[in-house]
Image (cartoon, rainbow, N blue to C red; front, side, top):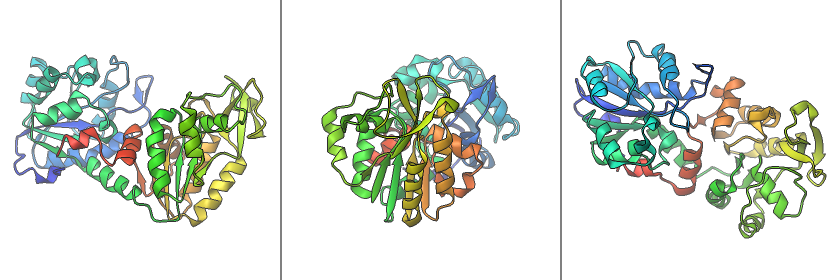
Length: 377
C-alpha cells in the first residue's frame, strides 16, 4: 500500500476519502464518536496540505439512513465542514467545485445507491469522477467488495490513510503474538468466526470462545443449551476444533427465560441449563479463569462480547474489559459491542490498540489481507 504521505501534489486537488462514518445514532444524535475521532488525523493532514477533501462513507444497513447526524457531530471537530445531500451527480460536483483549498465536504450515505453494495462499475465511475485521488481510510469496510472499496481504487491513484496504515500495522502484530498469549473471541455466527479460530489456535497459547459462539461447541459436546441461540454449524468442524487442547470454553453462565432481563437471570454451571432457559452471559468462575490466564499473558486479543450485550447482559463483557485494562499484556481489541463497553467504562487509554473494525478485523486476522487493502496495491 502507498501511504497518503506519498502523494506529491495536494494543493487545491480534490481528494476522495473513504471514511469510517458508520457510528451509532439514537434519536438523531451520534451516541459513539470513536470512529469519527480516529478519522481526524488523515483529514487534518489533507487540510493542512490544502487539498479539497471529500468525505464518503455509509451508515446503517438498510440504505435509507442519512449521514446528517454524523455531519452535525463532525462539524464540531472540523471547522467549516459542509454537507451535500447526495453522493454523486451534478449537485455533488457543484458542491466540490465550491470547496476552497483546505475545505472539507461530506457526501450523503453511499448505500442509498444500490450500486455501492453491488459494486456497480457505473456507480464506481460516478464516484471516481468527483476527484483526482482516492484515499482509503475506512478499515471497517475493507473486507467488503463494494464500489467505494474496490471499484474506485481501480479508477484513481489510490493511497492508504493513517487509520488504515495503523490498523494493518497493529493487527499484523496480533498475527505474531508474544507468548504466553490469549485470544478471546465472542459474539455469534460460527461461520464467520471459524477461519479466525483456526488461525488463532495455530499461533496463540490459549483461545477462549465465549458469547453465543460457545453455545455451538457446548451443544456438540453434549451439554444442554436450552433455548439458547445456536448457529447450526457443521458438527464435524466443531468437533475438530474441540479436539484442540488450546481451546477453552465457559465454566459457568448467567441464564434466564428467553426474552428475560438480567434481574431474572440465575447463575449456573454449564451442565445445568433448563429447556426454557437461554445462556445470556458468562459467569464469575469463567471470568476468574480468564483473569488468572491474563496474569501471565504477554499478548491479549479480544473481539466480541461475552453475553447478550444489546439486551442488557453486559456484566461479563464489562468485567472482562476491566480485567484486560489492568493487565500488563499488549492488548488488541475490536468489535462493536466490545468497543462500546470499553468506551462506556472510559478505559480506552488502558488498551494498547482498539480496532475500528469488527468483521474486518476478524477477516484480516484470518487471511492476513482484505479486498479493500488489495485494491490499493
